[in-house]
Length: 335
Length: 254
Image (cartoon, rainbow over all chains, first blue to last red):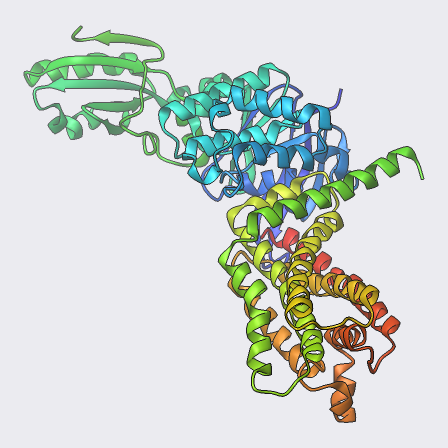
């Protein structure tokens, strides 16, 4: 059986070879049929450039792309019929209603006339837009436009869906709704190529992720395997009272701590040996008259693995508002 | 031709039609279209015709050439860069249709607007001034082929890889104004010097104006069938730079 995507030696140089900017550097990978494949990387790593080449919007400088066995260089037409594309910006026609946007796309992809209305209705109901079907998209919220954009991308029932940063900028409810839709589409058999820099999103959605950095694939694996490969970025998270914030420097100076990051009212201490660090923290708290409010050891996250691979500093991109559930074991100092 | 090939052609024609209908619905009320597409030819006409002695039929032939020329040519430079900027052009480029199909759809939009506006001008000429049309069939063919030719000319500018309509509207307007003054619209071909007339024959607008003169007034300098042929040929030729520029945009990533 063909892979959904086969990429061989794909290269993109903007400008003249030799003096141009190398955006994608001889990248090779495959995406299996039916999987959710995450494409992770920092800004400027080559994610969107790669996706644009995979969707025929950009001409590669070198290399070969097969979509469901069709070579894009010579046989793009059947491949295009099997692709759905949701770009980073929701590219709906704001002057048209939700219904007309869907009808336009259905016409463009030559969905059989007898099926167009039925599919449009089903999608609008699934995406919670049926009541707004006659409202122009210019009156839609960002989340509604995003959902409409996805509906437009799948009205022709593509076997392969490209999603470029589907959730940034959306409220938590809209983001979860879209993630749920992606899971549903995948469960129905659609292969999903998800370009994102939302690491937790990739962790929750993807069967495998590729991490691209400086135009090259740094690694491809399952999220769990990637986390396992980076045991050295385990951490201990501790909250102390009173005035626990004042003890950051001292905690960072404890033996074995490689990096410390303030996480709200807590400190996260990265170490290769959490069991050895725990008694040191308890000892420090006791000697300074501090109460340990909570103390958790954390397995490496996909974000940690990602930062290790891309050369970032652990803890630098996690936001304080993100939920961060302990992943291995926890010691609640207070109920 | 195989059944599959025939089906593909039917699909591509339907897709071009879909693109055209969508564009007409989305862009007809945009300020850029109203200004450069609908009002400009009338401004130009009145600027150069007021207080000059001219028969109604002569004025109508001039106005028809102007409306077809300006309205058809305004669409491409406005719509394509705008669609590139808001991201909707990617949807069209990624769709399963050939680039030529997309360009023909876009050409049809400009042609549709041009035919509509020139029909309004024609109705005004017929109803208000009671102008008689010498060759109605040729007039219809001239409006259609002129609209096609000037729409593909505008498309060539619209295909320049940019996301800012202003970047292409400026050179496009500059060229169209230049063509306007060399093409026998304001100074009849018969009154031009041989050198000026030789230059005029390089402009497709010359043939559109000449054809309008023949269709409305019943006399022209060039054979009307040659006028029609040149308009058709120039329309096809103007598609070539559009194809090349789209290929360039695909290489550059714009």
